[in-house]
Image (cartoon, rainbow, N blue to C red; front, side):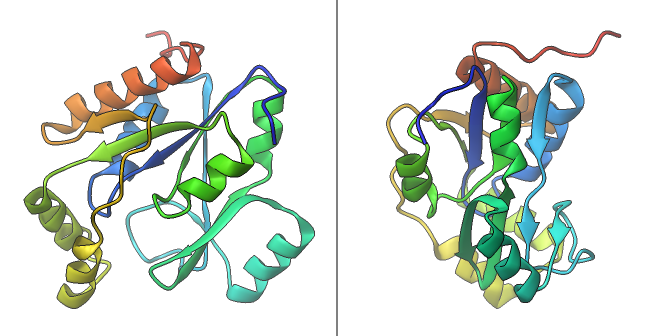
Amino acid sequence: MAKTGTGCLITVVGASGVGKDSLMEGARQMLSDCHFVQRIITRPADAGAEDHMAVTEEEFSDSRRRGDLLFDWTAHGLRYGIPIEARDLYLQGHTVIFNGSRNALAAQCATWPDLGIIWVTASHAIRAKRLALRGREDEEAIAERLSVEGLDIPHGAVIVENEASLDAGVQAMIAAIRSLSGAPCTEPSQ
């Protein structure tokens, strides 16, 4: 789908444990004019960490069949989707941000060539610590997530290094969103 509206569609990607959810939540609280789209996932709602719309495999398949998903992919034994409302918000001129997948990025860019990309990074040691703290997976599953490396950062992606404090990471995320969106996002008045 070629860009037809005045909005901006941005995906935030990075390896497991880089802190995407925390940075996006911090930015969401600061950027009142941006829309942070909740993912649809075939994961129980009480699985911890990310706030998502929990659905069954059957519900996910039904949504996909009806065309209710802008993007969808499979990772770590789960199915993920971005609701079609993200496209609608974009077409209305809004900046729309979603938590994406590095592995699904090529297909998403082929469908949406003007997709903005924020690539979050963190060291292996920091990622391991964060994955253990979130408590969703056992040591074997964490080791498997940490072993997924080697994906090239696409040209044009804005890199956010999340190695310091949460506040520093959130400010870097806000700056990345502004750089991709042409700064339509504004911080709420105090």
